[in-house]
Length: 243
Image 1: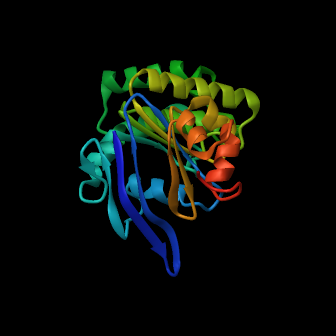
Image 2 (image 1 turned 60 degrees about the vertical axis):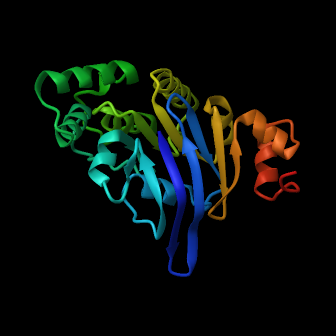
Image 3 (image 1 turned 120 degrees about the horizontal axis):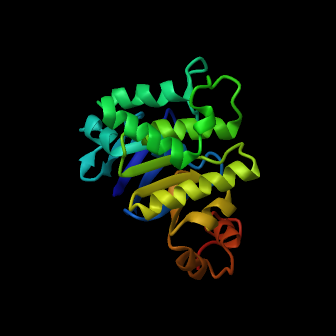
């Protein structure tokens, strides 16, 4: 489980994240939704120990992201907004390298790699260098790398950005399977269709603040809107605000 408690982060005079609090539970896909520049990525970067918060805490399975970063990293798998792949490494080499970073070796590592190749349907990519891969192929490699240590919490930052329809559908199925396995899945997006298709809970951030938090039905009820897109617009101040 992931718990964000009053997180705050400023860059100079710009307040990027302002007292953000929410909970993402195990076995639930939680969507972090907001306009571009709302503070979603900064919030996630504090959660996965890349950025130090000015105030507040990010807790993963009881471990504090800043006071115990190593403990948190063992409990999370991260697909960052910049995929960060090494162009001259093969798919297999990427997964093995990150497995080694997490202390995996021998049969345990090979078993994890084989499971991920099957889960993500990347058998034809295993021995190919990632240079020249399509966006969808790159996302699959980055996701395999993030999941190699079998983390109970998975963080996805704009996972469908730049993907075609078929790649998006395939990624949706992977996210559903992670949910069925009981993992906590937290993903950031500004695409309402993705959130509506996947999320059991939605947190909406605007201008660095949480402006709505609840199930899809709860958000529709709070805003008095019949669909999630209209609810999002209302919550972010584009349609009269929350009732």
